[in-house]
Structures are given as structure tokens and as C-alpha cells.
Amino acid sequence: MFRVRPFVPGHAIAARRGPSAPGRLKLGSGQERPISLHMGKFLFSTVNEDLLKGLLPPIVRIPSRSPKLDRLHNLLTLMESEGRDPGPASEFIITRLVELALVEILRMPASGLPEQTAEPASSGLLAGLRDPVTAKAIRAMHEDVGRDWTVGSLARLCGVSRSALATRFRSVVGIGPISYLLRWRIALAKEALKSGTARMEEIAFSIGYKSASAFRTAFTRAVGCSPSRFTESSSRSA
Image (cartoon, rainbow, N blue to C red; front, side, top):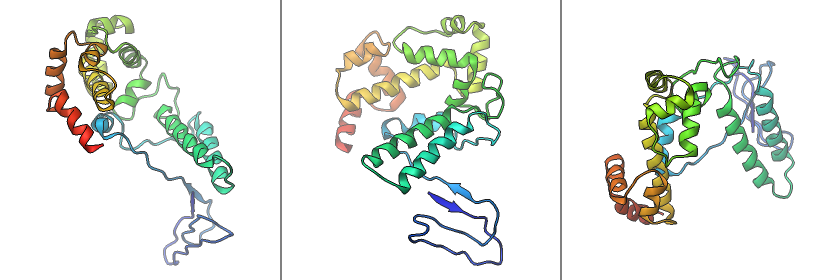
């Protein structure tokens, strides 16, 4: 963790590290309230990196008036405390705290308004999960990806008309509901093919395709190569 003080023009940048301030960097000589920067990096599987990049926002801003900010602050405080005074399994604990912090950040509404009325700052998966209508459709597709979903069946589940769901889903998530379903199916298939724990036919049926040939055609169209070629490529790069 780094504690940063605002830089005051005309003053040199003083960097101090030592027993009195381990792992800390002080910039400038101002007396304003210090700013804490907690930095980390998550490495996602390259198999579905494109899906994450397309559906997650490039930046998430959490207003200071957010009603859930205390939860995130508590996690960051626990991380700082564990880092300053490490004990048995500290690395494991910090890793889990970082993961929880990320989940809390992604769960937070885009503003200080209640979640059910907050307007999404941008389109994408997070905005879709915050929207009360599109969230129902997304959860349903995730929970039963193999079902023969249509816009009509999803609309009935969400309590809106077919056209209303199609328009709202595209506006909030950025793509139509069936396009999202197809992307999610292919993402699950890529993970299964990479792990090598199931045969192609089993993967096809589990994600909603009636035959291996139908799955092979859809996969090739979406990924640009056949499932078998993808598996070979994944095993070579592993």
C-alpha cells in the first residue's frame, strides 16, 4: 500500500522508505489529508479475455456518498493490516481479501442512488446486472444455459414485452439477449475444451446444442476455428 500526499509545485518529490514507513511513498510536502492507493492486478484466462473486455467497463468510479462504501473500506483496512503485520497464511488471506474487494467494487451501483433506480454509467455486463429487468434475463441464462431460450420466453420471465426486453437489453448491456446467450455458451465451451474434462458431444448438449455438428458450426463461426483446432492450440500454449 502506498500513501500519497498531493504534490505541491515548486517542492521536490521526497520518497521515503525505511523502518518508519515500510512500503510507503510520500510525494510533496503538503499537509492535506493523505490519499491511499491500493494497487493490484488480476490476470484473467486468455481463453475468454475478449468477453471480459467487451462486457466490463474500463474504469469504475465509486462516489464517496455510496451507501456501500464502508464495506469496501473495511476490506482495504484488513488488507493493509495484514500486510503490515503478516502472520501464518497471510498471502492466502490477502489474496481472498483482494478478490472480495473486486467483487464489492463490481457489485456497487454506479451512483449513490439506490441500486434499483441507479442509471448505469455505461453499457455492459455490470450495467445489465444492476438493471432490474435485464438482470433477471442474465441470471436465467446463466443458471440454465442449455435451455432453448428465446427473446419471448425471457421477456415473459422478466414481465415485459418482447420488444421492450430486446430494446432495453441492447441499450443496457450493449448487445441483444440472444447474442449475449451465444457469447456465454461459447465462453463456457472454450473453458470446457481447454480443461479437456468432457467430450465434444457432452459440451454441446450441456450448453444447448442438439448435436455436435451444430455446436461445431456455431463455435467455428464465433471463434474462427473448429473446436478440435482450438483444443490443440490451447494444449500447445498451456
